[in-house]
Figure (cartoon, rainbow over the protein chains, first blue to last red):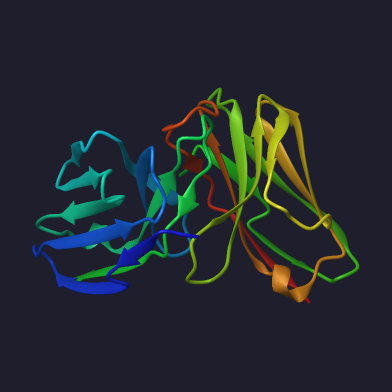
Amino acid sequence: QQPVQSPQAVILREGEDAVINCSSSKALYSVHWYRQKHGEAPVFLMILLKGGEQKGHEKISASFNEKKQQSSLYLTASQLSYSGTYFCGTEEDTGFQKLVFGTGTRLLVSP
Amino acid sequence: DTEVTQTPKHLVMGMTNKKSLKCEQHMGHRAMYWYKQKAKKPPELMFVYSYEKLSINESVPSRFSPECPNSSLLNLHLHALQPEDSALYLCASSQDYRLAQPQHFGDGTRLSIL
């Protein structure tokens, strides 16, 4: 069963903030975040490992709560280039990589 | 530009045709993946190769046949496909098959079955 992301879609004005959530029903080893623009390849943003860590990448950061099997992606002071579809990808502790992608969140940043 | 190159970018084929999709990476990665992505849906894993050996087949129909001739190249051979197989086919690679490795994706091949 694939992870569920919320919201399904969000529209922002440039400079506004957004939070995208990813929730799994399974015990997770890690959560990946990817952004895919229309007609392009998904692009890796970051990985969070179990341990409840928080990571940052410029104005994009994320957290992972392994007890709740939830991760959140934080987009601050959004830029036009942030537009796209965001997918979380989850891994269980099976010893080998097998990503299951979430349902996706479509983000549109307007001027 | 992506570091994973997929060809062709677009492919239209009939249900009786045989065609192949090609994926190439020169990052020295030892794990390679095929995904299928329908419009407005997430990528779904099809196959995983680790050190040129098939590690995972996610119950994919036999009309899809993967091949990994060497560590840089991954092919997907197509035969007798159905209209529901129309989708974007993405290739990805990672350093190896261990957990928590970033995956690098190609731009995909958009496949249409007539």
